[in-house]
Amino acid sequence: MSTEATLTKKDFASDQDVRWCPGCGDYAILSAVQQVFPGLGIPKENFVVVSGIGCSSRFPYYMNTFGFHTIHGRAPAVATGLKMARPELEVWLVTGDGDAMSIGGNHLIHILRRNVGVKILMFNNRIYGLTKGQYSPTSPVGKRTKSTPMGSVDNPFNPLALALGAGATFVARSVDVFLPHLKETLNAAAQHPGTAYIEIYQNCNIFNDKAFTYMTEKDQRDDHTLYLKQGEPLVFGKNQDKGLRMNGVELEIVQLGEGLTADDCLVWDATRPNPAFAMLMAQALPPHFPTPIGVFRDVEAPAYEDGVRAQVEHQIQAKGKGTLEGLLYSGDLWEVHGGSP
Image (cartoon, rainbow, N blue to C red; front, side):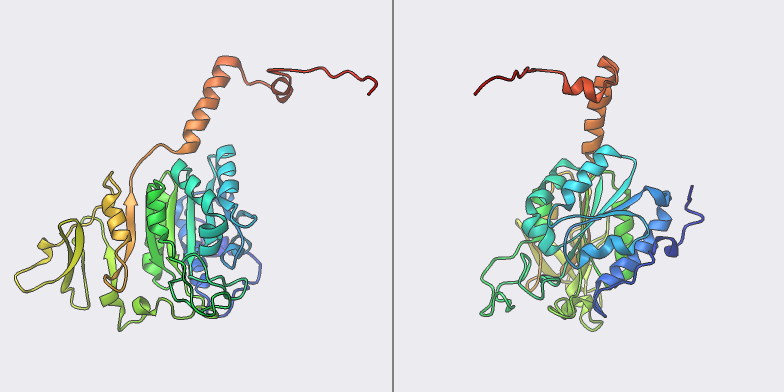
């Protein structure tokens, strides 16, 4: 059996040629996952990667683990069934903003509300990349694409607000090129016993290039990115001279140094049972606020598979293990006899 001491990144790299476009942000995410898995102390044969349809969903081919490449939007259903049948497995689900937020939206909200012990990586490039550049459920208003030549008039989903509204117990955001932060976030998700949902900003350099440069370029990053650090004040900026505080029921940015210090800013706490604060932070986005990244919510709740398995074990103790034949011949039965019409 494999152990933490013997596993390396190479152990999780398959022999398949990686076929994403050169420069795609998916490469960085793949590398981060392959670096994180060896350190989790889990036997390699216990990992399963499940995906739907889209560029991101090629992920299982490039991971040297068990995996399913399922159908469009249905990966959460497959992952739920797998976790129910084999709760000891470490199940990771890879999806994209189109796969998860559009055709798979219904499946996504239910895996979140049930708190199934699956880790979900939602690659958000704000475009349909595999089908050559149509607008997606997360594309901004006015986005010109092949399917919206005059600009999109759809209001986009806020993926984190959607997850929080569905009752997700772990919600986070990271960025493809922020490798240390991404690995830290993946590790935090891996430790969570229920559903862990991570939105990962991912650049599509073919159909939506530079969508996130306002927060990834070195000369802009510090002023446009807010790192959520547990137990620390919400401070940002090149000189750490800006902060967030509450003004009534709204967030506001304050300039530090003019009678205000970091002590006057909000202190981040992702473990609050009430998701209202996390929801407020999920709505804090450009152009009015820097983009928050990190863990928005991390609370404990019973995992769905544990509850169902407990019911199964209770029935086995009460009535015995049973057989498939016994199940088929239980309940109401009918006997069909032949006869003339």
